[in-house]
Image 1 (cartoon, rainbow, N blue to C red):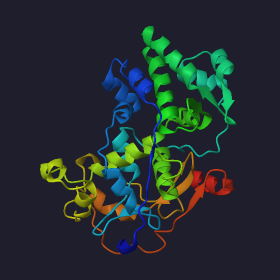
Image 2 (image 1 turned 135 degrees about the horizontal axis):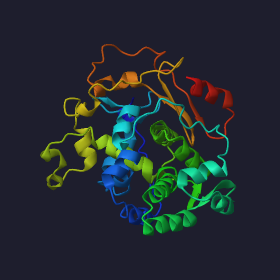
Image 3 (image 1 turned 90 degrees about the vertical axis):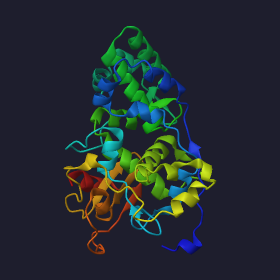
Image 4 (image 1 turned 60 degrees about the vertical axis):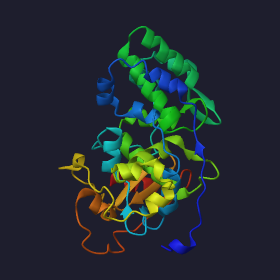
Length: 328
């Protein structure tokens, strides 16, 4: 990669209003129990990002190798790291593919503890997309909270987080893809695909970087930055870009003991790397480049076959390829 002729990528954050989700989150009675069932979703809503860190990171995305290539090291977001980040396991089941049938009213009602008649009366289309109005779900969440109906309240709150924060599409609307992902219950691969797809598409200056993707990227990146007080001291007058550009491979916090004993997914079926599908399309990443992040040395330069890549956007004619990924 040519660091001498780099075009700076500008980006803006496309951020929905999270006050309502935070307010509902404050009504959760047992935070540890909630985290055990739904992961670290509530802390994600409250993340305060230090200005300059994310803006520096996105400049170093390497579209050829699906990683962030700095002058002296590479970093690769992985399924295992995102699993740890959001506090949810990667289930041994097919994740969201985009080919699922539209959920039945009965299935949505059972998962949200709502009546089937309420789902049928409120499901609608907005911008040509099927889904549920956020206003309806917010009112139901508040009702169940007031009635101390813990399971119903938390299920609807999580569906709202999926629709308005994790996978926002239409304003104030939980679209059918978010509902499908919620029902499938295998969040990690879909979230990682969403983040990779947005970064790879590099449309930060157009649609804006979705706040969820920005939050996850930020939290992932800072987990690898030095933990020394000197690095995080803002009184030295240095910009974050200067601090980060001065780092070498020996400064990076490579390994977290949380991954001790974790089985690393390094390939899938006939794919020599890891294919992932999300609400915006499909992409793959190369775990071979992340060996050092899991305490393994890079013995040799990866061969070309291992680094084979693909990328496609939502709506493109790729059903057969999606099915191949699902089979893998």
